[in-house]
Every structure is written in structure tokens, then in C-alpha cells.
Amino acid sequence: MSAFRDALRDLPEAVFADLLESDDAYLLVLDLPGATAETVDVRVEMGRLEIEARREKTLPESFEYVREDRPLFLDAELPLPPDATGAGADGSMERGVLELRLPKYEAAPEQSVPIEDA
Image 1 (cartoon, rainbow, N blue to C red):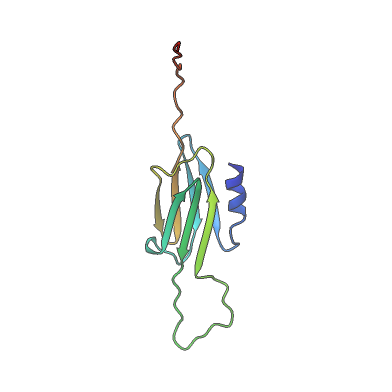
Image 2 (image 1 turned 120 degrees about the vertical axis):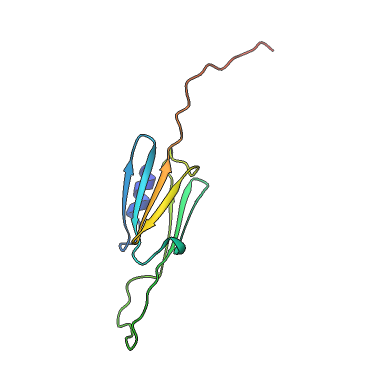
């Protein structure tokens, strides 16, 4: 899981993230001010979590930018923790905060492997 933690540290400074863990899942909480459920796309592909978010910004009439530091887009690609899976993952967005629940692989019960004479 250290690659996942390292990738979280590499997110742009404007993005704040928390990673929580329970016995059966990880919970990733990302602050994405200005983004909505309609402007966020999350995919799990080949052991990686891909997040694309678009921020909505409005420019008040008669104003123009002197300085613009809030990017309109965030693209992040994070390696999944080795025991996490995208199967059954879910997410929610409320007031610019994205919460992603990533289940862990279920522990396989120990079992004997039968060996037969050929």
C-alpha cells in the first residue's frame, strides 16, 4: 500500500486527501471544491484508480482574472493498495467532497488441494 500513500502525497497541493482503512475496505476522501457528481469520473483499471474531475467556476460580470490558481481540471492516477479491488467499489459526492469506498479482496479460506496419481 505504500505506493498508494506515495501517490497521494504527489497530488497537487490544491487537493487534500484522507485515506482510512477498516477490516474490509479503504475509504478515500478527496476535497474537490467546485466539482459535482456530474463532473467527476472515477474508474478502476489494471490495478489503478483513475480520477478525472472538472471544477465549475463562474466569473462575475465586470470582473476579469488578475491571477487564476484554481485549475479547472484534476486528473489523478493512483495505484490501488494490493489488497483492494474495484469490484463493488462505490462513491458519493457532497459539497465538493468525494468519498470512495474500495473493498478489500475477501480472504480466501484455507483449503487442501487434492493431488491425484497420473
